[in-house]
Length: 82
Image 1 (cartoon, one colour):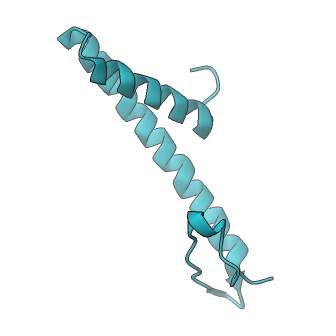
Image 2 (cartoon, rainbow, N blue to C red):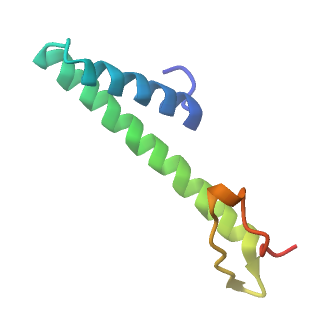
């Protein structure tokens, strides 16, 4: 993968999942795809952890972290510090 962005990794992971679910791969190919998929999962988790850390820093106020839940359905939380 030339560019290891979260979006590229997630797209590739979705493709690998489709390939594995098709059942058309040999055991050897399935293991190769699974290994690649696990590498991508670790990459995505790392990117998400980095984002979480950056968000926590942005929410840091008076040397304490203000924990504000985020819900995707609402498009965010209106209670975020302004």
